[in-house]
Length: 67
Image 1 (cartoon, rainbow, N blue to C red):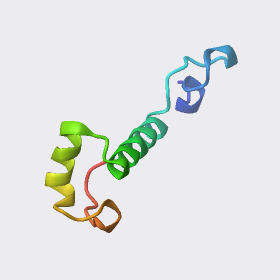
Image 2 (image 1 turned 180 degrees about the vertical axis):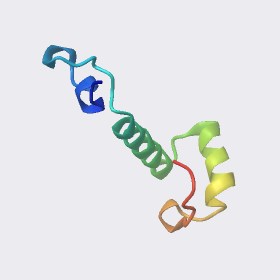
Image 3 (image 1 turned 90 degrees about the vertical axis):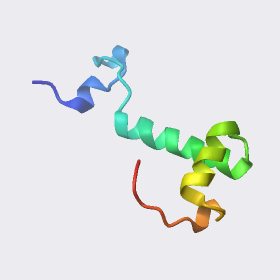
């Protein structure tokens, strides 16, 4: 059995180079936050605003479910 932390190491350090899923998820969510704050999201931004924000600014949103 191999620890997940070892699998996520870069190949040159003995790992498989697989990105850590929790870190990748956080990075992708922060990228969306950045795009929402900039208003640069196209159709996806319109869907997120309609479903979750419902006319509120992002920082005032209290929706806690989902990733």
